Length: 262
Image 1 (cartoon, one colour):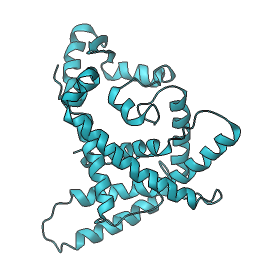
Image 2: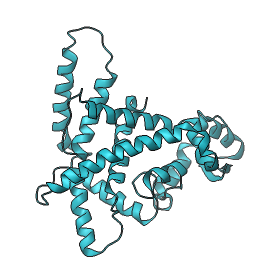
Image 3: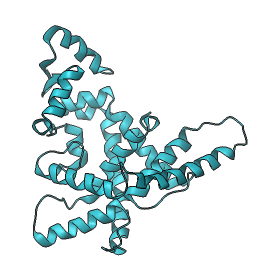
Image 4: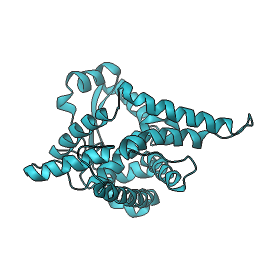
C-alpha cells in the first residue's frame, strides 16, 4: 500500500479484482469503487443509499459525533440539510455572493499594487482573500490581511488539512491503539482546541447581539435555529455549535483554494 498515494494502489487492485472490491486496512473494512461509471452509479444514481458517513477515528475525536463532513446518523442528516439551506441564504452558489467576491478582489488587487511591480510571494495574500470570503459568510465580517488572529486561524486550518492526509494519521485511523506513537494526532487535536476556543468566543459575542429579524451570518442562523429546536423539543441540531462551525470553516477553506491545503 502506497500510504502517500493510496488511490494508485486501489487502481492497480481494481484491474485485478474489478471495479468493486473489498479490502481491510487495520480494523477498517472498506469497499472500493473504481472508475467513473462505478462511482457515478453509486453516488449519483443511488445517492441516498450511499449518503451515510463512515466512522473515522480521528474525525470522531475532533467532532465528538457532531459536524457535517464525517459525522453520521440522524444528527448528520439534520445538520446537512440546515447547513445547505443556510449557506444558500448567504449566497453560496448564487449571484448574490458576487458583490463580496468583487470587493475582496479589489482589496487583493490593491495589496498586489502596493509592491509596485517588485516580485513577492502571493500565497499568503491569496489564502487571506479566499479566507475572507468564507469568514464573511460564517462570521459576517472580514479581517485585514495582516491581522494576527486571522493569520493564526489560517495557519491552524492549513496545518490540520495537511496533516489529516499524512501517512501517520492514516495509519492511526487504522490502528487507534498506537496513537501514542504519532505526534501528528496531538498537533491536530491541539489546533482543534485553539480553533474551537476562537469559535466559542465568537458564538458568545453573536449570541449577545443576536437579532432574529436581522441575521447577518451563518452563526446567527445557527443560533436562531438552535433556539427554535429547543422550544419545540426536536432533536437533531446539536448544542455544540462551535464544533460544527469550526469543521465547516476548515472544510470551506480547503475546498475553496488548492493553496490552502499546501
